[in-house]
Length: 447
Image: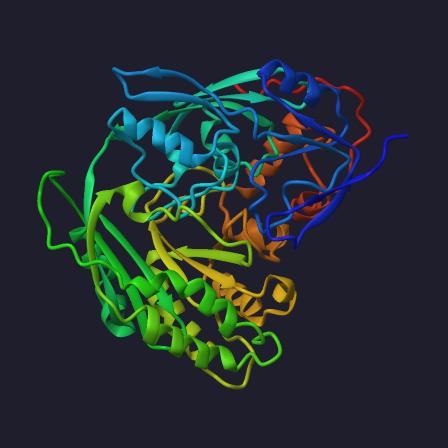
């Protein structure tokens, strides 16, 4: 009898026992492991705050499946294995003078995990929209190639890893460009009133909102000639201590939530009052190269036209001392444009996203801000980030994702034994359990 081991997430908030761990390096191996398993999940960087990566006896570690497969220089296409880290992908394409125009704020996630959860950046489409083809290992181990224009490509782009295991992915890149970025604090009433104007005027817009202070730290970027000179203004040297200061100031806010408002004001005065000006590629200028492990994250999205009303109500709620919903800073405000991926946050609408962070990982279950933010976003038809913390399940999701029921139907067809569902996902999709189907071949629904 095999001995049980323990799988632990990046911030140690999720732990599961497992029996079999497969570290795969080839597509053939991946296919064989999937075909032989009764239940299986797969993981990369373990950075999801939602419980999607483990929870079953057999696991696949995708990290060693990380090669660049090929380039198409004429069409600016790159094909990679899905265990490749985002940072490595960007290094490779930047060396060729290419870019993917919309990047998330962290570079340590695997390509497969980023696609499965709908990872996005700001002022553009999510990462999945730059995928033009992929090879998908189905529940029975067979491999299906899906290309742009295929009827079900929009279902596959964001699937939480429930339609199969992505083996390789081909991205369509664009010519690299340089951004001139200006950063600095703005009052809430100022940045909120100019969002639409700023999105038209600038190529990049991101706001680090600072709850309980009345300010946001606004980052605006414009494309410029790489050789253009700018008046560079560097951030103060002490900015590098922001994480340490946050950790210290938030240390006991799970016991005294009200102190968060005071801590935020201190952090704002020390770390968000400055202005900077710099230039670089999208990757160089905007992607976080390192993130501490003391975070727990939730993120919600809402239609652009509903955001002002939601934001006004959110401020009223969290600034009331009648509740414990005091929010650590910053809340990351970003913008995604309308797409057609079924489980994308921007399906059918231009979207605003807001990230909510708890810096006391161990006390995240009692962090009232997560509950208040979720309740408010659901009220306005908001959608949760698949890789981050939320409580909504099938009933709520079917009301906010127009293609939710279609996706569920498709998922049941391609995975009739629920091989790719762990307990968390079983509850999310409101599935009764594993169907009594032995070694059934995947239904041929992908044309």
